[in-house]
Image 1 (spheres, chains in turn green, yellow):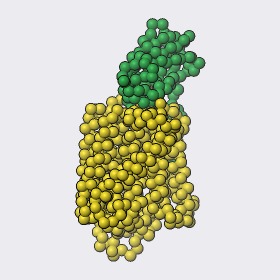
Image 2 (cartoon, one colour):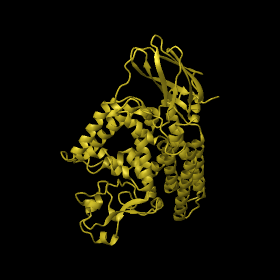
Image 3 (cartoon, chains in turn blue, cyan):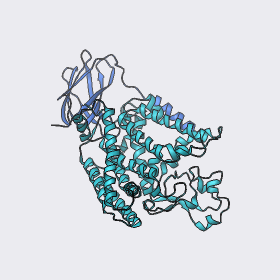
Image 4 (cartoon, one colour):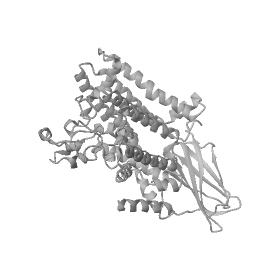
Length: 122
Length: 409
């Protein structure tokens, strides 16, 4: 029994110690897909960071069901505030995006953006 | 799982509760049932709280006689499947953690009030699933020599301090139904006459001899209903994640997801079984009520249903198993690569699933053949029914997947 309690305690402790990455909570971020709603296949992803230019930005798209393969994309930009990337989604349904980046002021950004209702290509 | 589900990020693919609960547990459960037996009931964590509580509380009540059957369990299994779809449990770590906590609480409450193991035998929906699925497992708990049992005066396997809490008397026990593989009987037998042994999978499904605590399968409509929920629930669970389900929901224009799901459950778990089994029973031309014929032949659907669950869960398990690696890594570093390969390449999944279904169909036809021999009637209506269900499963597997939190867009 002590071993079981110790294991439970360890799991809970580890669960609470997951590192947090976002230290730019006040930064405004907007995401747009073309077409909208997004479709299975090729989409264009536009991310705006008005007033808070970033050095690098990446996107990871996940489905709401655990175990489905995520899709990643590295965004490119000329001015640091408007970022763009092709995003190839593999299945219809509910997705969410995780946008990660390094801002030019040194802060780290990590946001979750829901992308519900991805539809099959016509 | 509970800790991460309640306090961790509410992202299903990145939380222990949802990934371990809906991906690894279900895949390993089916693998265990396929190669051994009811291993997950054997290692059930919900019994921890019960065994701990019984050190302090001795339950004095007997489980109500009116509830000593599987009707409540069937209702709870259907409710469980309904809540899975309606509340989108797979995408909510917190809801998954709450379900686990409710399970612990209910097991503790019932088994603190009532003698024996009524939670396992009459309530637990997961346990009922495992009981039915383990009828196609290759191992069972049984006696080595019946002669030894006949000479036994103490009957420790049922009456002893570690006698079976589910009421299974080894001398009359057949198969895996209601057996949690706890192996208490193995330890209880003073003659070392109870063991875990290999057997012919699914053979117990056509064996209608009297079995301890269950009686004759052919006289148990509640068990038949449980097998039907197991069978048609397999198709329903798969249907809920393909594009046609969402297209149907939008076409029917229900006002809420709950209403659509209620209608879907009514059609797939009530009307469809009534129609299909009624027709098969009618074509069997037996001089007895159709319901009785249906009860006697329902066990033949179990191997195919097991194959449908297996194909479905193995898809998720084989594509997502390795997400366990980044899932653990993320506790120590924020820079984790979540793109991991599947255990089996995508183009090999469909042939594997079709192979599993083919084996399930063959198993169901074999059981139908033996039941028909026993009942002295024709088996072809039941072969046809199994073929129809197999075709439905293949159609669903070939459809584009779609997973949403709501059916209605």
